[in-house]
Length: 180
Length: 391
Ligand SMILES: NC(=O)c1ccc[n+]([C@@H]2O[C@H](COP(=O)([O-])OP(=O)(O)OC[C@H]3O[C@@H](n4cnc5c(N)ncnc54)[C@H](O)[C@@H]3O)[C@@H](O)[C@H]2O)c1
Ligand SMILES: [Zn+2]
Ligand SMILES: [Zn+2]
Image (cartoon, rainbow over the protein chains, first blue to last red):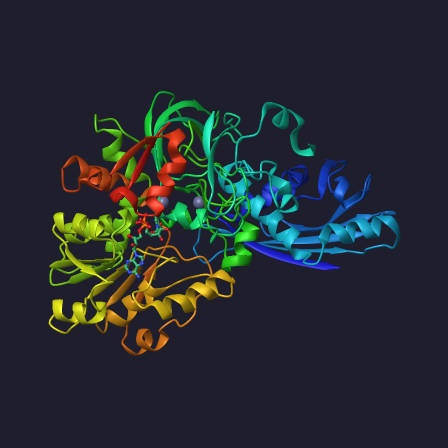
């Protein structure tokens, strides 16, 4: 399965590139990622969140990079869900912004994990990536993923529809956090 | 705290709900001193805006005192104790739309942008108390509200103007003003305004302030037309006269140079069978609008004129007079108001006495009587024009 998405961010390409190249930042806006640990100059260890399939983890390596312009990576070894990605950072015509173009590809396996991944992406798989990039834009332009009372947990907004009512969270709801 | 909530179609209910808390670093919490009911709330009440949920706190016109700020709020911009008016569109101040001062199209403030995009092609900004399509933000008909991007939107009031004088900077005064501004008013212009609700009244006042030669008010409620007339505008009752002929008469056969739709999706029609056509289609949801005012504005406007739409539409409409629009070189302009753009200049106009926003207030009620406020405002009872609620 191949997904593409694009957004424009009002920051120059080197800034957006640097944020993405620090792979530990990706889980702040990509809904299916729990954590990325850097294990070497070009290598890293990725773990996915539960909706993507419990305990799905893999190693990855950067296979190509041009500072300020592009980063490409792919999973290595025996990944449960072999995957690869490329992101290009292109100066926008306004002279201040960056067009971010992302391509992700997944080899969806059979079995339980394959089913979980398919369910995660649903009928319109690109939506997940669109939402990821919207959050990347929020983080780069405003500092954080934006939260509302109806959609308080940022990364999960779409999955929560219909949402909790647009009224403040109780202390216990807030304490329980996103997994409540 | 107490808050007025949506409780299903045609029902609001004041309930006890948790107090708001800081969720993002640039949030502030405001203790609300005055809040209002808007014509837009009626579209929500009547169930014409999708994605409302039972328990959603309503209200997008409010002001009060800052009682808490997040750690990301620049103290040079906003502090605890400041008295502020809060604009209804939530805007980040940093995206491309905000840079272009298109605050109601902010690209970052709506956590449900993906849903809004499905409906509108591109997403729209978050709005307080205005469905989950615009973010699921709790509204301001409450004792307290959480205000995101508090370092961007809220306007500090440092003079001793009353709440009533500045409250409407949150929405309807800038909205009416934008409606007039979009008309590029010339000193020779006759401007016709459909709807003599609070938004229409401010569109009329703004058209005059911007130099229009004559301003015409079109509605069916005699008391609202009288209110417009007292402010110096020319009333036309669409239930008593044929609007198009009357407008021709008032303009020497030219038609108004500029037309403002301040009615929106729930217009009524002087002619019962046409109203019934759209009413039925709207009820079965095959058309989401009853666009009588918009159609009439387009047909009435002089060739080459501007039709400025500030009445709210949500979806799709039938029998759009594309022929009149195209063949007579009309310009259509519209938008949810970019309130942040107008707050400061309009505050100055209020201070100079050029506009008196208090003239539309007919009722002031405690928040606990919000339900009654909605009822009289919606049903035009007791000569109701605008309801201010006190939490
Ligand atoms: N663009 C924005 O940012 C923005 C902001 C606030 C409100 N609004 C919208 O502005 C509109 C008016 O708001 P309001 O608070 O004044 O509401 P309101 O309901 O008090 O006023 C609407 C008026 O239109 C009149 N009307 C109905 N059908 C008509 C017709 N065919 N011709 C002429 N008049 C007709 C009604 O009698 C009423 O007086 C609403 O659609 C509201 O959602 C838009
Ligand atoms: Zn309003
Ligand atoms: Zn913005």
